[in-house]
Length: 216
Image 1: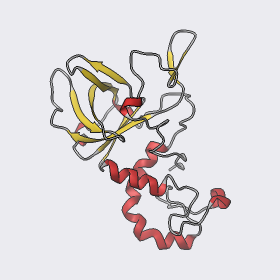
Image 2 (image 1 turned 180 degrees about the horizontal axis):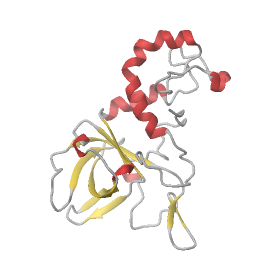
Image 3 (image 1 turned 90 degrees about the horizontal axis):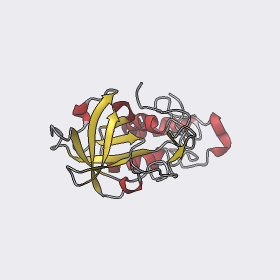
């Protein structure tokens, strides 16, 4: 597993709330650059995420598969799925799970009389079977503090790439093998979530070279 990019779920440049997402029918220079041929390409990679608070609207024949999610600001909005490509186990879209959508945009739906996120490429979606608050806490422990030992808190920056890490998730970094061993029981309950979050962080956010799905 590649080392996760040093960023944070609290970084709204890369993980915007619903209200900060670009609108599908407008050129937002914060997110896109217009090419000479008129095509719009992203300036960087961004990912919306939110906890599913209702999956009871998931079988609407006209609107497609629909869930309601709570974003990092606490506001609740809809995600509608109209799959054209990719794959996703739709049964994972359950209340209490957190859904991540890369390159998400706001679209106006007249049937809803409001804006929502429209998903067509399912490979741009990842679902983690955990609530939002727990994921934010896990990310703050292991991804927001990459310069500190996950056990004793010592500064590991001088060690650079030589700092010991959890061999499974690569997210927990330590000042010594002894600290890694001592922290193993406590880290064990977070390791699976760290592996899941590593898939969210494992790309370059500052530039756009190509579309990066969660799955090929």
